Length: 410
Ligand SMILES: O=C(O)C1=C[C@@H](OP(=O)(O)O)[C@@H](O)[C@H](O)C1
Ligand SMILES: C=C(OP(=O)(O)O)C(=O)O
Image 1 (cartoon, rainbow, N blue to C red):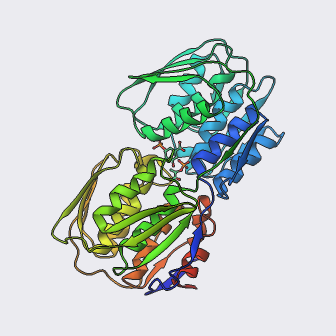
Image 2 (cartoon, protein in one colour):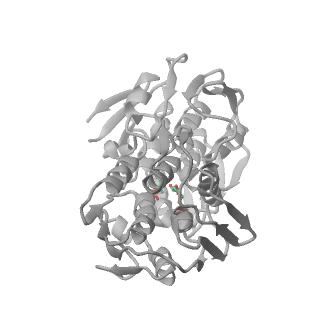
């Protein structure tokens, strides 16, 4: 389904957008709930990725397809490693079969788990034979994806002797590791993270506990971009967000001050308000190694506002739903922007005007579709294969429609 977005403006200012729980928190809590059934979860994410995770933890079959869900792939690999007397094949979309998993598999093999590759060495599909794990020391490379680390940490309290992880290299996406540790602490697991060493103590059972998942900050990023591209005075409210977030993408609050967006925390969420114009002479420089999922949003905001930018810390983008660096360069150049990329950075030159009615390809990447949509405040634009958004935010187009975006099927 391609969508034509006519040039739009925000009209329903008093509307509150309800975004469901963080996909990252939800997928961690679902795994913890499978390990500790007296854990209850509220405001669970309605994303495809969380549905896939939930179903995979419930079914009894021995082949599970996680489609495009990276966290589900990595977290379930760890989960099935400790399910004794079960042999499970984990597979995914063709892109998932190109997303590396060797660092996690090597770590599980160091712990004594039997994992074999069924197609290409280092990539899904894999076959896992679950067992009781007594070993408790693992060294692993930490500069490729934090998901491998979170996966091991989530099962760590159920290992006979807990876990000591020694992280090698520069640690990437650290807020996601801290999110995992904080959730573990929340159910009473003892953890420590000092220097490059993480320790988790074993915990057989937990007390009854209910978690209310905070709404997804990565999804909120598209509203930050919308407000940044709107005229002064425009406002949008988003529920349910809090000032002390576990999610690294809450860095949006600081980052979007650069684009004239003010964030006001209310008891039930956020009010975003455009308060000032950005100086078009300035270059926006940001290191996004702690918030990789908002890189596309920020890049397109800069493009829409005609601002030059230099974004660094993007080394994980090449192994996500698509190679996001190449995808951004290709699509921004279609619109008339000038882009340079390396393996870990992206810069855009100041661009005075954008081409109209360009078809943006989305590469089966939800964030490509959602990041480019706010440009409809500046130019008419077409988003190809727009239903990809369901990976993290199924009601995205309905919500945009409700705030005034003019969206038509093509
Ligand atoms: O642990 C998580 O929930 C995630 C970690 C990040 O991945 P990397 O650590 O691979 O950057 C992020 O991009 C992804 O969307 C979700
Ligand atoms: C990278 C993402 O997800 P995952 O790695 O879980 O597929 C994302 O949601 O942007």
